[in-house]
Image (tube, rainbow, N blue to C red; front, top):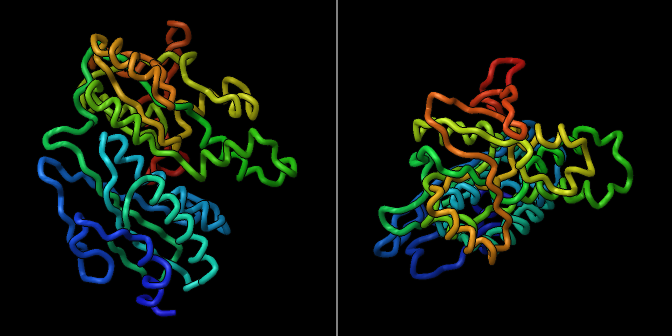
Length: 330
């Protein structure tokens, strides 16, 4: 199967033609119509075999992880998903692999309300990239800059689960067979991240800054602190931990993973204290839990980690995964 037959057979059916897609798959470029009064936001994510997932990973799981991670960036901007493009580098045109990948990719795209409008394929080591495009009201959207002293630091969902899912894979030789339900849930958090789109839309009128947690809470909060020229304190005991994570590992390890494990794709955002009561009332009817885990401080405070108000050592703003860290680093 050549490149063009591959695209037609597996991916052309993943697009829905509507008034916003002037030209989609099958031309040199997609031509898209941005609605009046809206701004376009876009982001790109790449997964590489051996770096982001283990060799031999089920292609359906790769697709759900790729789409969840990419669309999470739109959630962090308070954006509505619109379109995406896909670039595949494949060792070979393995048709069973492609069929499973495309089926899972399409299911995720439909669930997130995002349409495929183009892409590229080539031969090489297994590498997959998705560029997502979304829409926000003109001049609006959530950003990393904007946090102010006294703002509350909040996170959605629970943290550390994806790192536990990775640990289960790395220790596959000592895992019970079959895996308990709690471990299965942790694997699901690793392979099928759920971008917090509805949460991003809900907090858009209240939050002063936002980021999705891909490299760990400390590292990603650090991006907010730099962009906003502020410091922060985080209360370790307030970190939201799932029952599955608590069942899998000890509480201190769970908290460490919540701080720096990464790839939970939850939202970390800041809210001015004066807006919190109104937002909290809205969150009572929201299906994703939100926890306050700290507050924004002056820049001179740096990043402080506390246990019930007592300072503890913090790994600093650069804790978390870094692709180009020196050997032995994170």
